[in-house]
Amino acid sequence: MPEKPKVLIADDELAICRSCKKTLTLEGCDVDIVHHGLEAMTALEKNSYDLLVTDLRMPKMDGMQLLSAIKEKGLNVKVVMITGYGTVRTAVEAIKRGAFDYLSKPFAADELAAVALRALGRKQERDVKENPSDQPVREFSSLFGDIDKSELDRMWSIPEHSWVRAPHTGPATVGIDVMYLRLVGEGIRSVEPVATDTELRQGEACAKIIATRKGDPNGETVTHNLWSPITGKVIEVNNAIVERPETLSDGPYGNGWILKLETTTLEKDIPNLRPFLETVGALDLEK
Image (cartoon, rainbow, N blue to C red; front, side):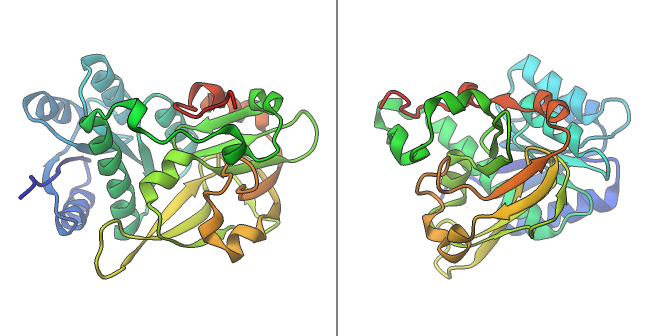
């Protein structure tokens, strides 16, 4: 029998710790609780954890300082940041610095479960250390459709999450990253973008992806939030993927886009993102 994933919860609010522990225990995890960053760092150095769920604001050592310490020590643990209202921009910055994802308070149990399932799945992939040559490499045309390669210089991303392509003039296009799709799984049931005319802030949910749980014999679903990489007003929704969600992975950087936005603070948003060409991994951009 495989070992249970080990999860550490770090939050100075006992109620949140208990709620998170209950949710992740039901997901089959072995969960420990600490109440500030220094205590979390001590636990991480003594024990091997697969996932850390930590509050952004804590006494003694906050979530960002904890994230930096983890990186400095080279600890192999996925980090999910819990943020309060008004700190989503900081949370997006945390992903740029190495966090896997974040949750905005208040969050539901199924939101935590969805993020944890993706994070644990990603860590498992990296721990296996598969030969890159064994991984399927998709050609440029199957990922980008008829997008010109010159447009890649105007693309940025929340790594392994969402991307934005912002031409010098006209609306910006937002979509989902290939790795995010891979972690969600093949059984995508529906894609629910926010409505046209919605005013989005960077880091807010721009769509919900409802997918079958990986390996679930009963076909139960999980709802995954997709964060908007930029701030702006939604001017168009891709109805083609709403009507046929199974096609989302067909050209995810091309015809599989989700929203088009009229940008408002693009120059302020970009520093929190990573240039797309730094995050494309094994994609074959030569063909």
